[in-house]
Image 1 (tube, one colour):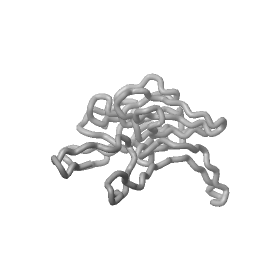
Image 2 (cartoon, rainbow, N blue to C red; image 1 turned 60 degrees about the vertical axis):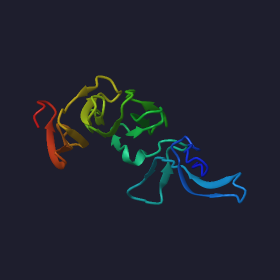
Image 3 (cartoon, rainbow, N blue to C red; image 1 turned 135 degrees about the vertical axis):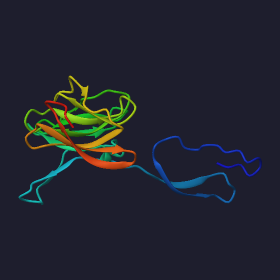
Image 4 (cartoon, rainbow, N blue to C red; image 1 turned 180 degrees about the vertical axis):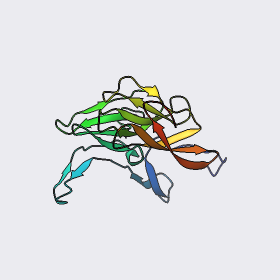
Length: 187
């Protein structure tokens, strides 16, 4: 709200939703706006029958999860970035029983996971040290450790053999594609 009398500004809303347009009554005692809220859900479909579609999750939450990443892991588990716990963390969804489990609990963002099809280990992006770097952890979230220490690393993706991870490194504003050998740490 902007006061025409003294130019003071006052916040009316205090949330993470988007508001589209605003109009006031002629007596200036009420306003109307459109509040929009995004909801992200997981769906699966058969590659053989695109009509065989199933919704796996439902409910409010995970605003912006489309940019937080998701990866299909072994044993019918989807690993994904989510805001469901209040901050941006890595979660797992067991497709057999529908249970979700939070794998990271760091107050700084953990997101964009990729999963090894061999052992289920997870490489993800974390800002725990201030800048986005690649980290690795066990499939249950244990034994997290930092893998890279450049300027900014993101978009990890496991090789089919599970021995290396491709990723994007941004140095001096230029993104380049790198490969990280997991057993030696060589880039």
